[in-house]
Structures are given as structure tokens and as C-alpha cells.
Length: 262
Image (cartoon, rainbow, N blue to C red; front, side, top):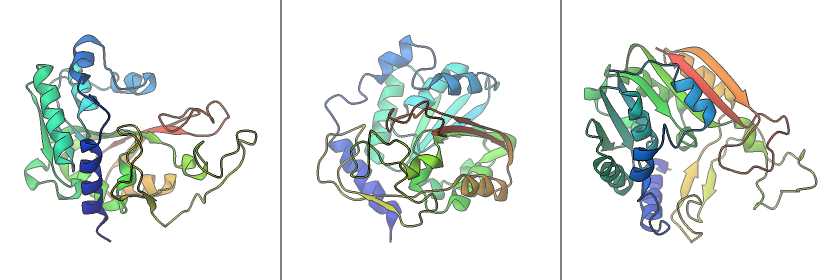
């Protein structure tokens, strides 16, 4: 199953079917707000890291808004990588409109990032929903490790794997009166298949196939360690970051921030 190229086609189609003006005004937010597009816990974490004069990158950068936001912390340069060529073009346009000249964007499969970027970055980060698009996390984090300088840092902020067990409000298994209901296996191996667009970007439509994968917390942690990085911090939170607020403050782990060092 060539899931990488299938997802590339689905993402590019989704961008062509995006809601009117989706992402077009991000440059205004970047010019007028402090560290936009990050929640307070991520802001707290990245402000502890001295990025001034450093080289940074975002893997799976989408339309670049988070990377461009982080440029406010004065790194020397930033590079965003994403598979969808048309979304990368919006990232470049946003950077131009926001007058951010030291940030570049590259359209590529993350696993195939060129060797010219090896040992280049002091800091690499992933944002919400990124690593779910990779079946083999060991290959993904191996690429991160190759691109990091010695002692470089990787940060992930993402949905907690526990979320994969919970039915969402639009799914048949959801029961608003019984939020303790578990519907899916934590150890799910089969991929998630979606053909109804990309909710945060588009209206619902009969789309090309999106293929994503569940990973347990141990999958994530062990793959990071195998790639030659040490876990420096792992924090878990009881609020969701984009799927649904139905389970917020129910003492479920719904979100996490992980920091690792090469």
C-alpha cells in the first residue's frame, strides 16, 4: 500500500477544496500576536528553550503557520517540510506577506529529506496530528536524529494515544451520557481510512483516501530512544487539542508534550 503518495494526493486535493480564504490571513495574525497558533502549555515549553541564533525546522509543517510563529523567538533560520506542494506554496506566501525572510519551505516526503539537511538543525518540532501519518515511527525519528546537530532537541505536541480509543461525537459509538465508553483498541494495528475531506480545512466531500496510523505511547517513546535521542521530558494533559472538548477535564490523558535530545 503506497500510503505516502495516497496521502500526498489527498492533502493536495483537500487544499484545493479548502474553505474560502482558509489560511490566507495567517500573516496578519503573525504580525500582530505573540507566538500565535500554539496553546499556552506549548508556549511555556518553547520559551524555556533558547532558540536565538539557532537553526530550527518543522517536520509536517502544513501551511507553515506554527514555524513562522516560532520565528518570533529569533532563530537564525527556519525550514518547514511537508509533502503537499500546494500547501507549501501557501506557507511561502504567508512568509512573504509577514516579512519573514529567513524561513524556507520544502515540499518533500519527510522520510526522503535530503542529506544536505543532516546535522543542520538545533531544534526540530512536530505539531498536532503530524506523526499519525507515518506507519513506521522508527524511520521517522531516525530521519529527525540525522537532521539534528549533536545535543539538538526534538519537541512533539500531539493528541495523546489514549484518544484513539474514544469515539468522537460524529461517530456511531459516541454516547454523550456515557463518556466512560471505550470503543477502539489501544493496540489497533489496522490503519484509519477516511474519504470525507479534512475537517479543519474543508467542508465534507467525497475525497481521495487519507491513511493514518495509531501509535501507543510506548511506540513513540521507544522509537525516539532507538533513533538515538534521550527523553528529557514527557508531560500529559487532560484536555483535547482539536478533536472534541467532550472529554476535557474527565481525568483522561488527551494531549502530551515530549522533549528529547540527540
